[in-house]
Image (cartoon, rainbow, N blue to C red):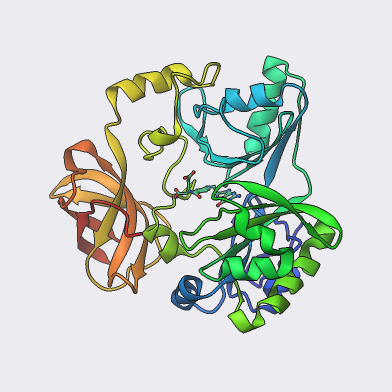
Length: 369
Ligand code: THG
């Protein structure tokens, strides 16, 4: 069954796990990289509580891979990001800002180093494939840039490791954070990393070959019945508490990595050849004039944030809120916003123009994680 409010079409792609997602009773989707991404199973709050106490299997096939393959793959990869990749080992994953020639954020993917001459870029929601193909053609490197048949399936939550061991064996316990190993499933070797878009711990299985999608989904569900495994998805409340940014929501091409708080993932001085290097060297030196902040919004549960909400200091706009949700654990609306330097200090009192009226808000010291 296709989602009822989205007209079925080839442009909005199903995933290798869509049959399982639908059988599990998905209640809402978003579209990400022109592919279905579930957003709700029972309710956002029920899904949140379950994610924090048990284990979930997430269809994150929409985190598409841009594959770089060829003798110049490593050189092209370093052109794409201001993060220094020179010490990155095969078997490692790096969170890497990707910027354009002005230092503007194009994507915030996870880079996976499979071999010196073979990389995956596990992308957020923008057409990075086209940028990478353009860069490769423009500089004339010997690299094939493709979107392979690879679909990430995330296993997240405090019981994730116990579930993964049942399907892939004890070796799973030895996989370190942002590292991967190769593990067999039905006679095929799959890349399995300890990573994922939650702060609850877990793994991401890069399912190579869509034909393996439903067999793996079913195997995880069967193996985890007594662990209360459920179908889940990236959870808005949990990811805002954890300070995990969403490209297109919390940042766009109009923002530098430094504005996004991703300066720690830039080593621009050492990232020789990186596109946008000169622009970033300037902003790194001067420091950003606005930056991502955790924000608490007072009052009842906020509605969904489908447009930027102005952040005010009296009559003056000093920023905007871009993601917000009621947190049952913190008994406050947790939010992510971009705030001008003049007002970004912790405990600064602001007002936010929410769709249902003006609310009090406070800049927080850190995300709630
Ligand atoms: N996993 C994979 N691909 C992805 C995502 C993912 N592609 C899309 C999107 N998510 C990319 N964005 C992010 C954002 C945050 C993180 C990963 C990808 C993340 N951040 C950790 C943090 O900020 O605490 C750790 C960063 C680090 O220490 O390196 O995990 O989730 N495959």
